Image (cartoon, rainbow over all chains, first blue to last red; front, top):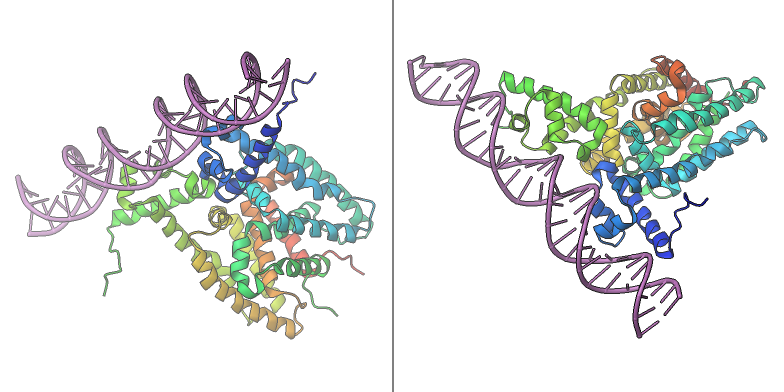
Length: 209
Length: 209
DNA sequence: CTAACGTTTGTCCAACCGGTCAAAATTTTG
DNA sequence: CAAAATTTTGACCGGTTGGACAAACGTTAG
């Protein structure tokens, strides 16, 4: 009754973590096909055959990475709850997503890489787990609209726009920093982004009065 | 005075176009390193050595593609003008960008691929031409804010948010369609997106009254 | 027709890449 | 300590990839 439990030694656990950390770095900047086992092995400080002792195939590393990613990636949306004040809930969802773009940019880029290439490895998850979750939250948001708590609009596209605007600061980071320049492109850019997004999603651009 | 003009035959012009079209398809879905010359050659209906007769190196194809892309890509922002009504100008900028995501998704993905990987080939352009253009338009937008025509906020992040929300429908297309499902994921999704974005950028989410 | 030029192809190569394997080195266990 | 189990390594392999090259083919101008 423990056949599915891999039962690993201490060294195996440590080394697998080391490899996954290195692979996240390499995959997220070069994509799957653009990355080589040698690169990952070097980043993890071991030889290629040694790495292949822990993960039999290159795809296994990517798959493991992807599975872990998805849980943490969707966590903020899962937390979006019906109990609090709608506008506050949405604001903190945006804030959490922006914090993830700031703190886990490699994860964001890994995900973006996969989607950009047509999501060949995670398509079932998109059509299953992800769609279910989004539909569920869209229903919650619709309820808020019916109750007059937020403006009536399309909940699905609202969620897309939150994903797009926040993940942009991870996925297009180099562009953001290049455009902002050395003075405004420092760490403060996330504070500025947070302020801007809060205003955008709250009031839009129409002048007051 | 024509040393820099490549002076090409009719066949060369046609075949080079054919190759660039094929390469756009291949590069935009597989990335640079993920694409092979053979794939591009096959998509263009010719043999690999034949392709290499028109473009000596794989990078030359990519570079040519990139240079062309950038002009058309920034055209909508260039058109953003000080003469019209600010709110109308912004609205039509958003609409144009969304139309580009719909009509030129491969170009969008090619660009996204390049940025995701740290923009190794176009970094100078980002820090030069692009930054200059954005700074210029940010000044225009600031003027609108001072005149009380639109709400006061950060013009740079405003531009980022327009890029992010519109390009999302090209770059993350598979995800958008997977989440919307078969019934809502058809061509109508761009109309829905246009309506949603117009409302978002105009009024935000705060309920009326 | 033919010489010159432009185009296409088959063949080949060296580097790279994912992955195997057996043997050596190391760690764990009794 | 010694046997057993685990970890690490170097050598190797078959397939792929970017690119070179010369020969063949086609086209066009004189």
